[in-house]
Length: 74
Image 1 (spheres, rainbow, N blue to C red):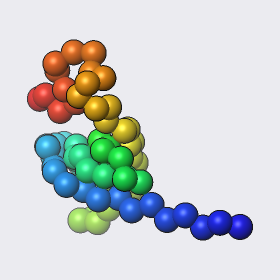
Image 2: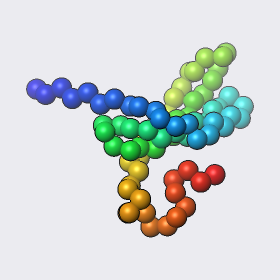
Image 3: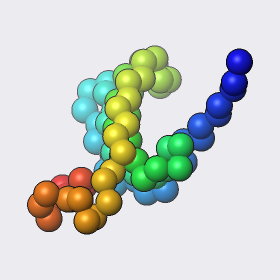
Image 4: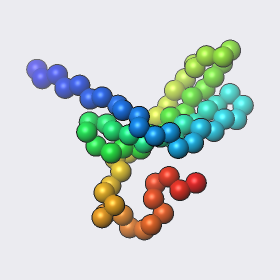
């Protein structure tokens, strides 16, 4: 059996949005050594995080982009 450990490193937080008891954080950083985008959605109850959902996607190198919009143009 082989054990592999991957670290998530958040390098830049682009935006945090909140409405009601939900908070969305949009960030970028490194996962398994690859440039990655992170979308984290939290549900808050009584001042504590009660649920968490996330999506991660590797960000392609600039040379592979199909347009100039980028990943984080808000």
